Length: 376
Ligand SMILES: Cc1cc2nc3c(=O)[nH]c(=O)nc-3n(C[C@H](O)[C@H](O)[C@H](O)COP(=O)(O)OP(=O)(O)OC[C@H]3O[C@@H](n4cnc5c(N)ncnc54)[C@H](O)[C@@H]3O)c2cc1C
Image 1 (cartoon, rainbow, N blue to C red):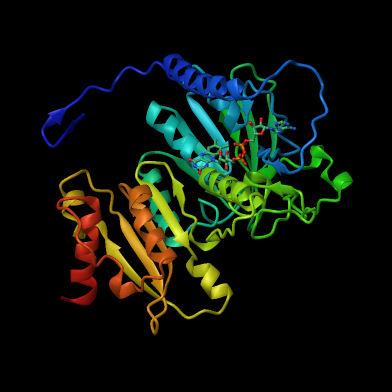
Image 2 (image 1 turned 30 degrees about the vertical axis):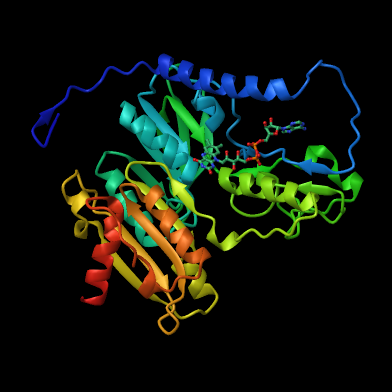
């Protein structure tokens, strides 16, 4: 392969070594945790004046795909396989499915997604989702959107046969073959097995523990954070909530700006967003305008491989309040931090980016924004 006059051979992939590195990293973190917690293997009853629930979430399973950890997998299993599958079929083209799928596509797998919804990426901006889907299709990743898996057959030793059915039209069924099937159809809070109801803690219909601004449940000495609570299941949301819960337990006033929690899809290129989408605003009958900036207005991007990136800002045309920022392109996950700050501080559209950025940097995108958007 040659790019900009530099030729490289595809690197040899040693998936076993990659998995070993991942396991070593996890083991290090476990070791650090284990030093904090004394584990004697015995059952113990612990008492505390205050209790914090942080038991995370578990993957949702589908009744007709019995996960076996060998050929029918959840995300936790696929990170332990040591051979790159020739054909990988992923049920669910949400954030986790896309992140996993694009890793294996780059490692050489033929990747096929079956997604029941009309778009990929869950609730991400529709335009960015279509742009990203088209980009992946150009890299030989296949999508069956508006299709559902109806069953799997694992009797053949060399492949799994997956039956899928169109959700629209004649509902025709067809069979796809894969070496590995990965199920990524969402996660549920890990709460039910804790018997929280016996303590009188209220949960919503999804099993999420209901909390107030202080991360406190309806039982005043029990707090809950992270994936066990409503909202996006994200590590930084969990971390913020945990820190604030402990502050609140110590009697300090706390507030989490839930509307400014960013989401990032760590693929290549990246997708990142914060705030509301066009469909959220339409649902709430809120008038808005959209500013679109293409990455080709950014000198750093045009000198690189370029991925037809786009930044969309949704705002109120009168007050210039920013409702949401959605980015598709290189370093989107870093760029979004500026949008988070702008939204947290209530910066109006006209002031968004009115600060100096070093050139050439992705964030000098902001400069182009000022020039292009305001015709200056
Ligand atoms: C494949 C994958 C990729 C992800 N990538 C990202 C990402 O890039 N960025 C991001 O922000 N988020 C990502 N997430 C989401 C992120 O991992 C979670 O939102 C985050 O870990 C939630 O933190 P938590 O503390 O609530 O739960 P967890 O991190 O899941 O921690 C819960 C802990 O509680 C323990 N536990 C459970 N039950 C009990 C019990 N009864 N007694 C004692 N201990 C118990 C569990 O073993 C676990 O250690 C990803 C998730 C997955 C599955």
